[in-house]
Image 1 (cartoon, rainbow, N blue to C red):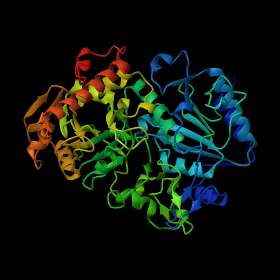
Image 2: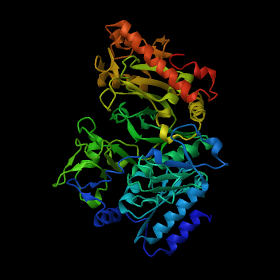
Image 3: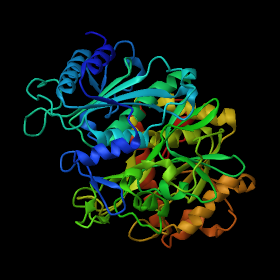
Length: 548
């Protein structure tokens, strides 16, 4: 196949109507004029991709399997689905043919990464003004020193055809077969070697964002940079911190600290120079958002201004005829999202870069109520808990879930971490050691019993423990070893009742505590054996797995 990037360049040169790097105001104007979005009461834009495309489609997300790079990828992971080179090339050719035929195209140049030394230039081609605005919200402007980037001469090309459907018959036997026997007509695919991606048939804008995150998570470790699915903030003394956690663990709430400037809420890289945010904006979940608990995010979307100067957009939320949002109505989806620039938040660090993190927090919402509310992890323990990415699903949140269930997501972002597990784990351990970074496990879940019996740990106390971890107050206290989960538990924490630090103290039935703790430890051990039993991990790390 002819060089696909060259083919796209030639197509753009021949196309009669290409809008290249237009202004933000022009994007907003075009999106509303073409009825791609409605203007709401606040001036923010509303759009709907329901019912087919209200979230990512992991079963339709592929990566090209090539001899030159296949050894870098963990093909045993459920989310790493291979596609052959020939099928991918055919998809590219079909996409170019379709783009040639549409009335107008939008070409946008941005970068992924606030540190110019490893910022990835990204060119996005689409026929939707609204998707172009999303790119403007989420990805960073091209810096003046982009030529210093290790990727300056080899950027990424993304073709986004959100409402085009594949010829399912043409790709029968090559792509996923649906329950009805037909072939899926949407695909999200990426070629790491040639740095090309396609989104076809998925209008959900997060598909573009998460593709580029996945690409960075593949590329950066090859250059000694650790990519992390986390939020990051910085204190007045320049002390940066990272917060990792799955949905429901309080990552957004705890990272939005008025005393600490936010670098970003989702995706960062840790290089020899420090921490940097990948993005330019936020992609916040809006369902049930409480303006009292999350005022910054709420105000970023709901501040009132002329729509041409707003540009925040909300996907798949209920909007009444008078333009009011109802974020408590989940009839479209539980995954309603808002996209807006980071600058819409009140306390940010505009450069989105900081020095090496002094503290890393792993957040877990343990619905079994058996993990300590705070514990310190040494290098091997941190590598293990990083690789496990544990939290709980709660009873009643899903059909058939009648009691708490464990949820493991490797590196707190399983769908987006394509490399072999020891790559990310060992890099974390090396950087912890090199930069003397302390790691704490924070349980934002239950105490005094599991879900339904105990109570969720008070947010005020959790904040106090988080602050103690961040400001060094836990560096000089005594610790006890917890043998079942291999944790180091502080004997005291300023401002926190000492009796709650050891979870067994909060249970009235000590035998029930032990039974519940043993059950969770066994689930850890079983998952570890299933997921990593053949990974040739260091024995010192394996021994830190709960239940072993």
